[in-house]
Amino acid sequence: MPEIIMNVDRLEDVISVFGSFDENLRLIESELDVRITDRNSELAISGGAENVSEAERAINGLLTLASKGEAIDARNVRYILGLVKSGQDDKVGELLSDVVCVTAKGKPIKAKTLGQKAYVDAIKKNTVTLGVGPAGTGKTYLAVAAAVEAFRDKAVNRIILTRPAVEAGERLGFLPGDMQSKVDPYLRPLYDALFEMLGTETYNKYLERGNIEVAPLAYMRGRTLDDSFIILDEAQNTSKEQMKMFLTRLGFGSKIVITGDITQIDLPPDKTSGLKDAVRVLEGIQDIAICRLTASDVVRHVLVQRIIEAYEKRGGADKPRGASPSPRRKK
Image: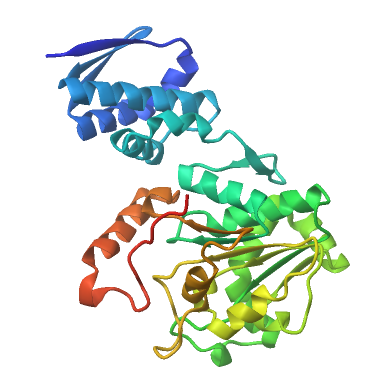
């Protein structure tokens, strides 16, 4: 049976790669049908020739992540194994290479997948970026991080976060309070991300000064937004007219990021999603990037990825209304 010996230098990285009770190694063994044995500063990998090679490449990829300070868990292991099997493990060094933003508690925010890195790079390079993908891929979180960093660097004077207040099987009218109280639950994910990036006290200070604005999409009509970083979240629930209205708010010195999941459209059956329409209409226009994130970019619990993949596989008559096959990633 073929066997290779890996020499490992940094013991702390090896411990991180192994995981608690060697659970990460056991996962690699299970996925690749190999046996991995720890021999002090060496790892012996035995099994089929191709599987042994893939296991070595996967461990080297995980060691690279560990050397950059990433805590290795089952999600990392499965993602690196996916890169190895698709022949993309040579790109592991690109992950975690750039810090998008540092939170109020000093935590660096970095892209954790190649899809996320392409998304972050697109935001930096383009005036308008559309991030389309399933839940848990970091579309909103990374966009808010990029907005906060641009604000700190004085590249923009304001951060404007908005989303359509579309009911997902519920009615706003039954919620207590005034209009602001009714729409706040729809904006909560945006608040949460801002609180983490800035801290509650700093957030409230900038909110009072008008440097930060969080509002329903309807409040954007009739405005021209200069020197602003504008994020439209849950854009799959915009109409074509709303999307056009929003895009034409763009002013000088501003940047727009639009995020959404076209498999979770809550519009009436006779309404076309503004996000789906915009992806088709804006494809190929200079200074507009369309980034398509997939289930492999999910950074939540591993079950979230499996749930998304299960729904994608089911397809057919049971596919959620408005869903479509994942389009080809723009190069």
